[in-house]
Image 1 (cartoon, rainbow, N blue to C red):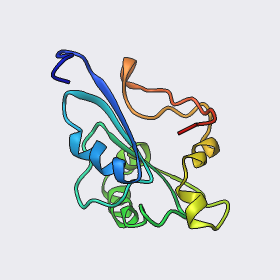
Image 2: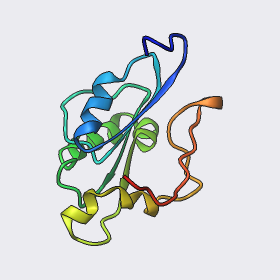
Image 3: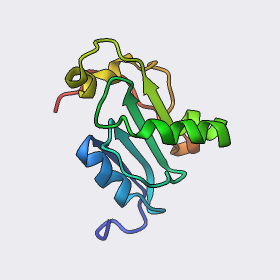
Image 4: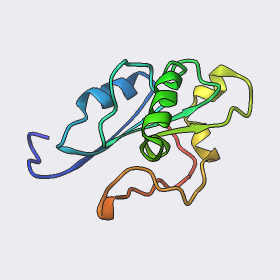
Length: 126
């Protein structure tokens, strides 16, 4: 960020790095997207987005926050905390990045050019 001043960045993280992404999230970053992030008790910023599986243990503690936000800010909550149904019943499988294949391929997550970032579902290799 120091080297490319004036540019907007996209931060993506899974599990423990999801917390790092959220901690680095600022007005210098366009989107901060976390997949099954470990829980951190903090309010989400307008440019932070969480994608999680119902069967994931690491991000389970985000559920109470989602419930509160869904009552207070229903439109905001649907866009910022996306929950994918548990298909396997296996918490290890539900924590993997493969769960992204269950998202609607036309789903728009985040904000970017025109206030949207399109996440295209493909096989992810890490």
